[in-house]
Image 1 (cartoon, rainbow, N blue to C red):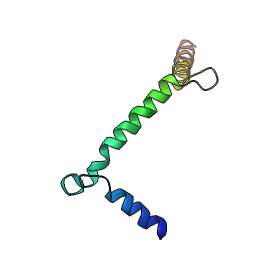
Image 2 (cartoon, rainbow, N blue to C red; image 1 turned 180 degrees about the vertical axis):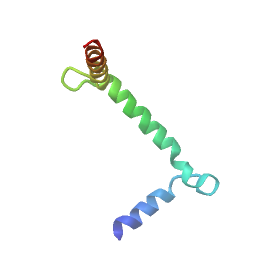
Image 3 (cartoon, one colour; image 1 turned 45 degrees about the vertical axis):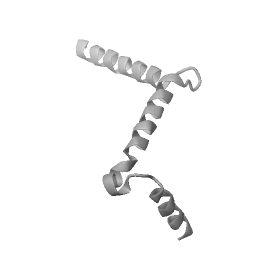
Image 4 (cartoon, rainbow, N blue to C red; image 1 turned 135 degrees about the vertical axis):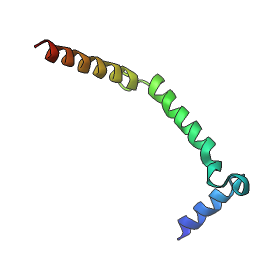
Length: 71
């Protein structure tokens, strides 16, 4: 119960409740999405980024589809 009360109090501190209602949290989600996108593009884990892996897997699928079509 204590955590719930603290959370409610914290959410009440975000301005715009009367005018925007629940949508007042939207800017936080836009910032969070932008931060995730930046992380996936720029941060390397090991030697690869998320997009390096995505491009490699996409080209592997395309190659396999061409090989199956050629057979």
